[in-house]
Amino acid sequence: QVQLVESGGGLGQPGGSLRVSCAASGFTFSNYYMTWVRQAPGKGLDWVSAINIGGDKTWYAESVKGRFTISRDNAKNTLYLQMNSLRTEDTALYYCARDPGKPWYFDSWGQGTQVTVSS
Image 1 (cartoon, rainbow, N blue to C red):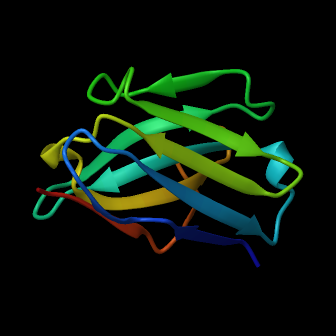
Image 2: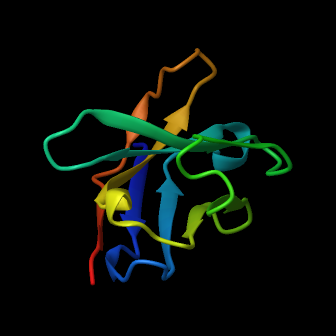
């Protein structure tokens, strides 16, 4: 079955960097757009970034543009999110999700990895 497993979260300092990863299995990873979504404590879901099949087109929320970089390695079935210039407001549970092609609909989600930004 489809599995998405995030890893790499943890504690980061304001201005610092973290990288989260998402290992995919159970489907042909290279056939799907992928996305990152986050949820801050007590808040709703917040779309962060998306990437196309080949990895040459990316999209970002305004709040992370210029600071975060999404990428993928189709040979390793892995999605990444490099987070630089971290802010306290980036504190959230970060989920990777599979995009089947319907607007704003993601059909498989990981369990999430916690990112906490604090001094």
